Length: 75
Ligand SMILES: [Zn+2]
Image (tube, rainbow, N blue to C red):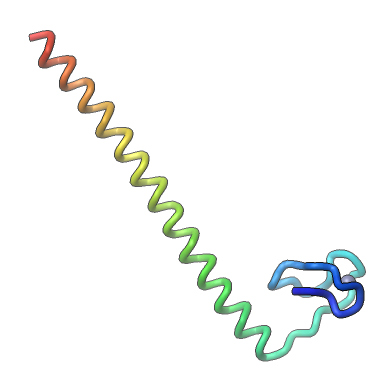
């Protein structure tokens, strides 16, 4: 959200400008935009955490595989 007074770039859901503290206009269109962007953010966060989880599980499987192989080789 660009401030109409000083043209400072603020967060899309900011209520006031970070730079000049002016109130940012809250139109219906902006509210809709904020809602949509928040939804997208949530989705992005979810997929990020899922990727992390998948990586963690993969690492765990690799470690278990190494342990099992080491155990079998010793026998
Ligand atoms: Zn400003």
